[in-house]
Length: 509
Image 1 (cartoon, rainbow, N blue to C red):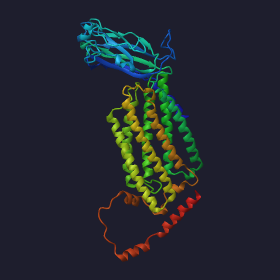
Image 2: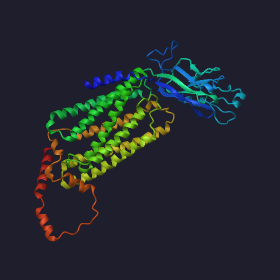
Image 3: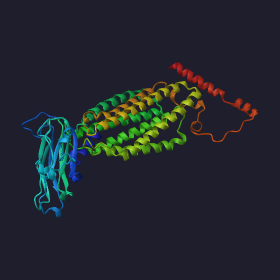
Image 4: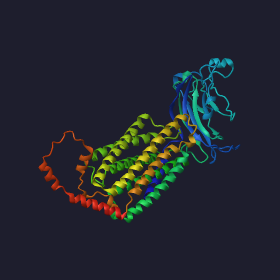
């Protein structure tokens, strides 16, 4: 209940954010060939039924609306009339219908003098050809600046979308004197079901499904913890933290998309909360898996000298992951805006690789220790844990290859309707791995059989020294009489008791 009240408060707070679907403030034009271009946005839009009485107030209509679009030019170039400044709206399949060339020469967007001589177009206009599927597309309209006029306003216009596709809006002009022109205003894009971009729309329902999945996992886990609360181990408390963070993350992401879909405003506060919950959850999950791999709470009571290194790696990963997710999600309203720069992706990938290497090296050392001590029950659960991790890594590598292939073949986002599967897969994979780990370490009446036992004779220092350090100096031979004394004083009784204890645990299972 407290979480729901908090999320409701965040929704009310975020609605005060002054942002629309695509807002332009001091937007600068870029030189592209012989044209000056400003990209106004790209979104996948589902079609709505054509209507003769089309109005943008209808809930079930798809449209792109231009509101208060202004083009401002410097005062020093306002002493003459300008060439037209165009708004160009086209579907990605019709991209080849924008631009042309004379005599098979270089392709241009603006009508050149050679093309004007051929009578194909008028000098300064945007070259475009009718779409094969709909002769009224692409949509091109604009405004000119009169002499001594500092700005021009594009008439308010709503364009109904009657064909499903990835749509693009560009503002283009061909006047070299307007190279310092800026654009202000906003465009509003809408699908039949709301304001979410087409690529994001399925994710709202996906996060609703994942919220339910985490609730079911939480019910199972918390009921087990309540039943066997006397047997709960520190490691199981850590898993409780990860499940709680996962429930919060999925719920906040759902509220983020639902709010955006309802109002057309990306709720910055909720997005930051969702990103932060996700970064904490991913960091906690990796650190816990590393601790389990090192044998924490099972064959060693503490991490010993590795505690500071594990904390440092976790904090570094959290910072890198948080920055990456903030860059990708906060304020993102376009279907092209979710591509983070390589500068922010690389640190997360490198730290992930470091986690994987350290985890499997630690698992190898832990296996050796368990085999040496003949702790068969613990060895069996670690074997299942290792198999689950190995499968997850192999599936991840395969999916990364598929993701690279998908993106290389989808340069223009033509397959935007399936793009939501890529982020959804990673959420499903992490949830599946968490569910497997929870089933292996679920609280039960004999949970203590997995816990560290002081009678085994292991200490944190001995484990760390045995498995993580190398002997650089060859030890000198021990005299025979010392070997005899050493063998007589060896605590065989403790090993015998530990072996008998493990056998009894196996019988109980």
